[in-house]
Image (cartoon, rainbow, N blue to C red; front, side, top):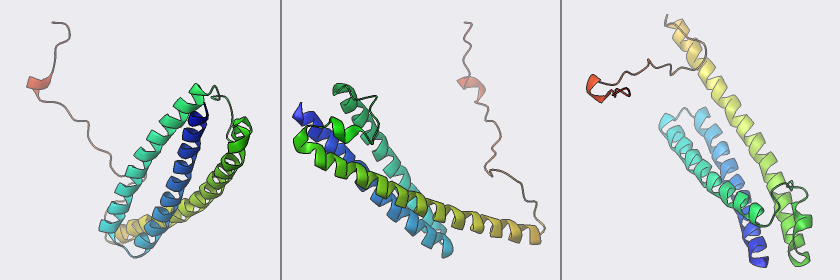
Length: 157
């Protein structure tokens, strides 16, 4: 049973480390947006996607461990109280670190989002000055793709 708690503690530390990496990526993203480097922005966004996949794996592992420990209905704040006494202080520190780094990530993310929105507004302004039509809303409105006739399947057959 203690090994499950150790694994859960390891997952919590992994979440915390991931939040630190995401915060760093968000700060870099803001700097890159301000320097108008689209190639670097693309690389940062790819890194963010990789980090999101890593978080998905950590979340699945966390959910599995909580289920095995019968703690699935326990909130993050109450989680350290359910750990064995010898691991409780480490669990409390891990939860506090996650909360702190999540707030830092939220701040960095908001700052990067504002920089991106400002850059997009500038692009819209330049396009409007050039006489181009500016559409509101998301830009990648693709036409619905129709598969070739040889790829269509008749389900009634």
